[in-house]
Length: 539
Ligand SMILES: Cc1cc2nc3c(=O)[nH]c(=O)nc-3n(C[C@H](O)[C@H](O)[C@H](O)COP(=O)(O)O)c2cc1C
Image (cartoon, rainbow, N blue to C red; front, side, top):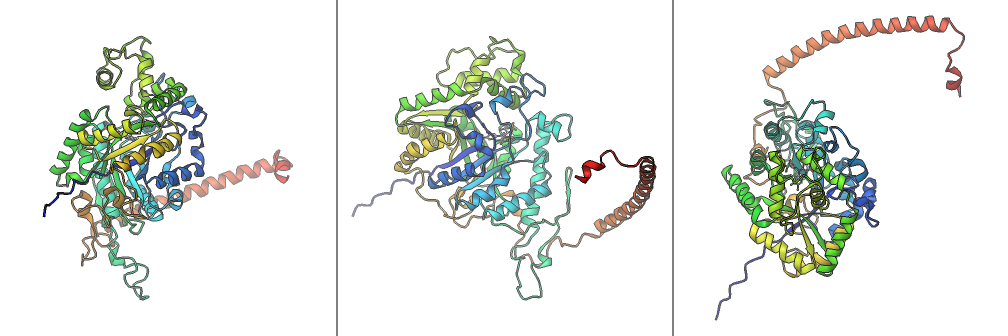
């Protein structure tokens, strides 16, 4: 009897839709394209319909990017004039609020939501994500960002941005705080352990303070929310600097990478997996997802024609505004004919030279403002794959093989058209090749289960740094009880007394002011028959 070796199992792709609660995301000006529905971003129906469509096609997630300020560097400083007509990531709504509604309209597709460790306090952020994890049955993920816009810094009360690597140091402690809240505060099984009328809703001994005292945060806890399905939402991140990659290797369960070719992305993939191994994590447990704009049609020609049609609607000023926000450099200060491959500014020069040597079809082209704008207008600086189903599927397979990525974050030129084309032309081709599932790994499961493909993997895996905070039901005597430690209680008592004295002084001041105000009012009313506004009030 001859034995046959089964063919090796093909890697199953992760496909996410990359979106934003804004008229245009990585497609400035495309709200002018007649079929585009980006302008409906304020409508819940717009999002629920998209989520249902993507779920029917078995997309893993919709991943919502977000920023906390306008792109106001170009022709700036603090100038949104080029940004606003282009709808270039402005105006922009907070994506988190839509998630429970999208979850209610779907069953399995998950939702990645961006939130910043620089501007959002960890105690409040942990509560918001726990709430949404509850309401979505564990289908929310957090894209951890440290933010990069000066306009956000100014609006959050800073003179300028916190230094780049310092933002990552803050983020690292921030993650410790939220792990303690999500994983360490409530013991497994603390809720309704004894539905006997004695213990009550939850066992108070199972809910402990976290006593976090660090360089950047002091959070006593306990966490305000009881444990949700995933506890810690599925963690996504996209760091490209050394500090960013080290942070991602430690914390992220999925990492986004942008790059023009898989050959160029591979070293970053290897380095992040190696760093993950270095901090004791299973490197293969980290999913690497590449950002790609796919324009697909029935044939290569049709797809190329669509791409050119979309590009006609792109807003070049909006694209340069996006560049200004991403890089911090205002290209308006340069001459129109300036070739940025040779500009004196090193950061811009190296970025543009990188594009010049890697973007296909641009060999020998002058990289002036117009070229940069046209390059960024669709899909930002992510890779663009344009063609019929075979061309696109071949290229995606090549990415998986060469770059060792696990899937793709698909941006759009026009919403929902780009996704409808992907669903019509590309998804069946990927399924025919056996590299994209025809059913979810865990129908109705959590984001973590479906991103890892492992039923039952609702919590962080044991090699993840957050796992050391797990408050297991087997913990007999809690390391931290709900009762504050003695020194904290003494400190709190002293603070209360000081506050009490201050309050007394404030109350006295307030009373005096009220009396004075009353005296003034009495003098004014006594001096005239009727207030000039009294007739209006009466009506
Ligand atoms: C696919 C992708 C999505 C991103 N989404 C956001 C986002 O929504 N909001 C944000 O502030 N930054 C976002 N970023 C930027 C990253 O968080 C990060 O700042 C950037 O990759 C630069 O890395 P660095 O900070 O390590 O230098 C994204 C980056 C990539 C590649």
